[in-house]
Each structure stands twice: as C-alpha cells, then as structure tokens.
Length: 266
Image (cartoon, rainbow, N blue to C red; front, top):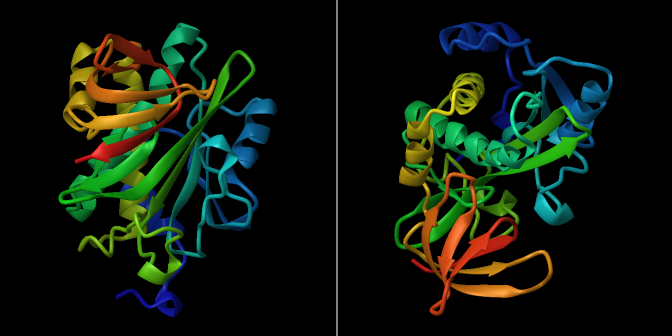
C-alpha cells in the first residue's frame, strides 16, 4: 500500500523527457503545488488568449469540481489533477460533445499502456475498472467558454489509498495493482489526447469505433437521469457518431445527450 508520506512531487525534467517521448508538441504544462481548481485556472488562460494545449497540473486542489458541481477529492500528490485547453472553433459546435469522450479514451489508453490497469470509459465522463463490479478510477469535466474554447479537466486516482477514496465504489491505479511514474502517465494522457483531437478533426471514423470498444456502458442496463429530471432505464445499444448514448427503454430507443449514467447491472 502506498505511504502518503513517501509521495514525491512531479519532476519537471522527467516530465519534459516523457512528453518528448510521447510526441507531445504543445506547451509544457504548468505545475502547481496547490490551487482551487485547475479548470478555473485554465479558463482564465483561455480568456487571456492562451493556445490550444495549454495545461495546468496541480498536486492538490482545494476546490476541485466534478460534473454537476460535485466536489472532486484530490489529496496532495496522490493523482493527476489537470486541465487542458482545446480551441475547437474549426469544428461544428454540435460535435464538441465528443471532447470529454475523447479525453476519456485518451486517458484510458494511457492508463492501460503505462500502468497495465485495464481501464475503460463509462459514458459520458468516467474512467472505470470493470470485472465483478464497476469501480471509478477517474473522471472528466469539460466546460465550454465562449465560442472558441473548451477546458477539459482530467482527474486520475493514481496512488490514493482506500482511506483516501471518497466512496466505496472508487479505486486507484495502485489499488488495482498498477504502478507507474506520474510523469510518464501525464505525458501519455497528453500525447494520446493530442492524437485523438487530430483524428477527430480529420473525421476519422475509426476513432469512434475505438471509443465504443472501450465503452463499458454499451451492453449494460443503465439508469440515466437527464437534466430535466426525467429518468430513462434500459439497455445501452450504442454511442452514435454524435456522441449520444442510445438506450432501449423497452418501448423505443432514447437518445441521451447528457445526464448521469449509473450501471444498474454488470
């Protein structure tokens, strides 16, 4: 089990070397010891005209946020708490819903390749490990700012202990038997995300196939609570090319564009 007192800060020289190895051509991330929210920090960078790929990583967030303004627990040095700026104005606004999904795909593949943990994505914003149960390994928070900026927050539980996890259904890379330097994992996430964005802009249909292949929601019975509080219960058939969840509720196929999706059975 990880000793919280033995955690070390992210090492910038090691990170730069790993970013080069991962093919990252964007700005070098800014590393902070603590901040309220990396999403809020990158939103301010966006307003100041920062370029795509601008990224802030914090060892600790005092006011980290998940979807629906839930608190995101981020113990010091125990994970990757980061946000990346995307400038998607060259793409139709209707397609921006793919950005958190692609961040999830990039992160899941990074976790798989760097740590060996078989992470999957749960539509729309979770990273999970699924065997006899579904355990949350991380999450994505995507926030649009104006007409040309989206801040994509990524939180990954790396070395969090059982006692540090906020709920029994959460987990960490360490608890799942994986191990890796956080620098290598961060570099892999950014490199993968950049490649996903390039393929998304090129309308590479295979990218969406790869997402579906790693989507733990497909083929599961789910309960989706929509923004208007309508609850949809049924079998997930697919994720369509617009990033919407297709749920068979027993009478019709319902297109779910947003909401909380809970696996009712595995």
